[in-house]
Length: 384
Ligand SMILES: *Cc1c(COP(=O)(O)O)cnc(C)c1O
Image (tube, rainbow, N blue to C red):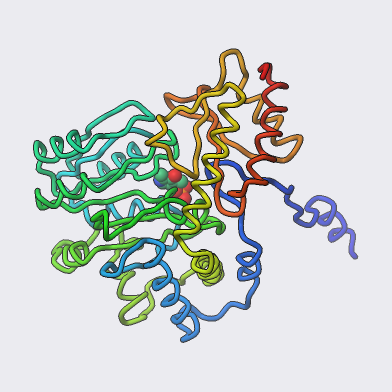
């Protein structure tokens, strides 16, 4: 080894990431088979083998999303890229977008739509609350928007917004519906067709137990028709869904170089889910969630969201009086190597955000977490 090489080896030792239990809102634990898929040899993005992989992913996504009529495709970018693609393709400059605003990600949607030149109207609620069927219908009837957007599982608050009434009212008004399913897909039922969603986007690193990097989307026939009929091009070239749909499902002509390894990973993650059975997977997450909540309440702690509106995979636990939540999180990370998240925005310092998803959603892992959480809380000044 030369002197320069030796110095480099000292300054940049081989990667050795710490072992973490990812009990946060994401990224979540990656299945060993998915890691294996990531190490497979690269082929070209126009290679017939890769085209087949893309086709498999689209087919597997239909099961995960719960759609037979819809088109599925994958955006090369994280969940926010799917959000931006949805907005840039379905919200035209000057058109009216109605947003159900009850957390951080509906604010991000609002910001993106304003940048696209949309006329955004919002129905607002406190972080952690949800909208009733009547409130949803009344808002849409009053505003008569071209597009409606809601966040199915609001990761900043732990609240689940059911979409059936929103979609029904939107369709009565002739509007398309965009649903943010970033945290829900793969962990809790999305049921794209049954709910009546027109455009859904998600990510790979939360409910699908895959690393971050892709955004799987689904679009209804109605949404596809809108795209075909749209006369002005989307302002985003990279996220133009007409071009991406053509590349990934029709002509397979070059649009961009798809991240091959991530598609391998997503394909494997979706096969793992299909083998378990999507409904069994939802049930496993529900069981783990019930067990988690039981343990939390037994410690004298409270959940932030009322029982019937909780996301099974992402729990918001109220920080008890007098406890320094940052200290608790640091203790968990330093000692057992557990990552959880704190609240932010209006919930800063008020909640812990704890994900119980994918491989971690088992009774054994829930009990392991609860035991360590109790120790960390005690260290943070709480008497259980
Ligand atoms: C994580 C998240 C996003 C953003 O996804 P990224 O992969 O971080 O870009 C959007 N919406 C919700 C509800 C999320 O939880």
